[in-house]
Amino acid sequence: MTALVLVEVENGAVRQASRSAVAAASRFGAVDAIVFGAGAEAAAALPGVTRLLSVPGLVNDLAEPAADLLAARAKDYSHIVAAASATGKNILPRLAGLLDVQPIPDVVEIKDADTFVRPIYAGNALATVRSADSIKVLTVRGSNFDPVAAEGGSATVETIEAPASGKSVFVKVELSASDRPELESARVVISGGKGLKDAANFKLLEPIANKLNAAIGASRAAVDSGFAPNEMQVGQTGKIVAPELYIAVGLSGAIQHLAGMKDSRVIVAINTDPEAPIFKVADYGIVGDLFEVLPTLEKAL
Amino acid sequence: MTMKVLVPVKRVVDYNVKVRVAADGSGVETQGVKMSMNPFDEIAVEEAVRLREKGAAKEVVVVTVGAQVAQDVLRTAMAMGADRAILVRTDDTLEPRAVANVLKAIATREEAGLICMGKQAIDDDMNATGQILAAKLGWPQGTFASAVTIADGRIEVSREIDGGTEVVSLTLPAVVTADLRLNEPRYASLPNIMKARKKPLETVEIDSLGVDTASRLTVVSVAEPLERKEGVKVNSAAELVEKLKTEAKVI
Image (cartoon, rainbow over the protein chains, first blue to last red):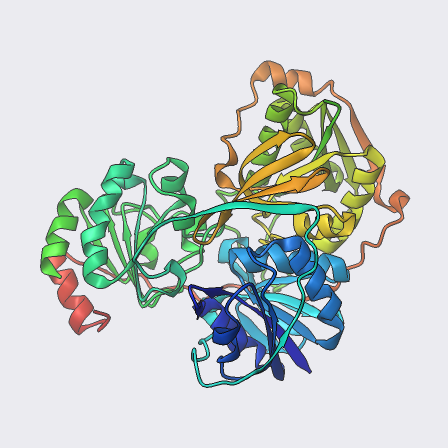
């Protein structure tokens, strides 16, 4: 059995979530990888990758040509795997549609080549499912699979022509400028909720994030209220994180938020309401006004 | 504009309910639990209604696949402004692939010019039906939409991606899946709820569509996740930092 992994490269480096996907795919047997746009060099260096399919002409990850191309290659593979990232979740279900198979999203555990564990109901239940499809199309959660190293491999590279996109055209992308680590791979995450009261107060998280080299996240309620952009959302419908340390500031811990962070190793909660559900999952809690706690925390660090 | 917008919606366990796993591990308890329209589907209904109000669409048709009781979410959608509804009746639980087969049949019959739907149902958390449907129809897709504009036979979709926002331009017909920031759904007013009772609701037996609705996944078991232990309260930031350093050894 050979698996094909869709690898995402950003600024010349393979994303950590993609390195986790390679690690997960290696459970099935040999691993080939495919990379769209630039980045063949970084992807070919991943340990465990035998062959790299490079499609330099397919820039911007448009789902339509990407899924067409994957479908044309699919018969060579038992499994097609991607990170459960925005790109993976856009392209792989479309591929599954083209192949007429049922995709298996957000895999957190691989039992065997056909059997997978995935969270349902915002992580309040874990379903073990067995697939009867001949080609399994799955996305995996990076936080549940230790990534392979970034270097050490030497895959053979096959360059492929990009198919015409036709029905979809890329217009533009606006990336948030940030020197901080990515939410999904940061060692420390500090997240704010509605308790911060407005967008300007999100800045209060920055000095602490700077000291801990942390990524900054937000609850859905905070995103809903316009305090923070959607790409900062942690939760069932945002990003799933499992850092070493998660600091929840002024957020109550709604079910859908907990779904995105409860696998963190150590959780700290700061909230005025001692009954807030976030304290039920927190290792350490401070009941208090965040506007008083945050400055003292910064000083104590 | 003569475009018809098809909005698939799903009846799910209400987002405020913390579900319990059934004792026999076959699934989760849904008996006596509050059910609602999937929140992302409400956003999709709202967007479709706004497109009609702006004159970019002629008609908004909502469709659901499920048991007879699922018609309550269709009435809700019509109270929000959808013009008519279709219930594709089945007592089985269908996977996204099967739902996409059903929706493809309905979209073809209705000659839909746009399908606008939620990006993800909050019960199975699959985030797949829209993409599968787009593939099966051979239509382009604009997933995780935070804004849409229709002009000159195309739809421009702003998409939520990991590092920010991306804009793509798609030919119509197309499939758009709604993300959180696309809009804020309206509440249905009482007069509109009354009016919705009189709007047409057609029931289609799933077998009459003649599509493949078989499951490809077998649920082996459903289990509770490991519960985290409740930790301790500390009295000050200094104490917290001390514990993070010496006890948790995380900083």
